[in-house]
Length: 171
Image 1 (cartoon, rainbow, N blue to C red):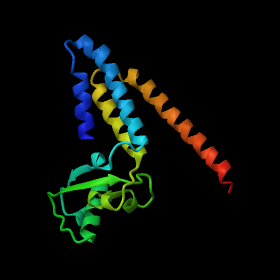
Image 2 (image 1 turned 135 degrees about the horizontal axis):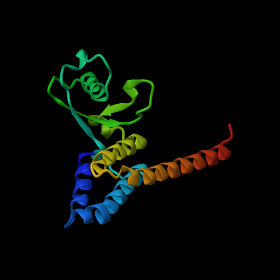
Image 3 (image 1 turned 45 degrees about the horizontal axis):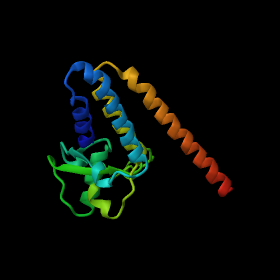
């Protein structure tokens, strides 16, 4: 995510004037956002680039809610790795919508055994970051329709794939 945000900002400010930012560079930035989303959905982004790092503010056992970085810390502890307050915990989203919080993320140490990631969660994170960065220019209305169209098209494609699978494999 950090690399995506840095690149997006770099694209925006690779201009000679404010007008150029709002015209040429803004379009390039939006194209970059959409291309990043496409690559994530196609699984062209290596899992190592999607690792999220968070600081554990207190001992993992002291947290009341099971937030992703706490789950990853508990997974590391279960495998015998000591995890303390102040440590940086690295994680990958594998199924962000799962009912069981222990199935939503894995510690990044486990990517040797698991190369799957939740592409939709990462697309959601990219779009949120893009809205935050591009929103500074007060032109969210310019990117919103493109994101909405992109999302709708992907949902339609997914829907069509599901229909095809149902036809191939009737229940």
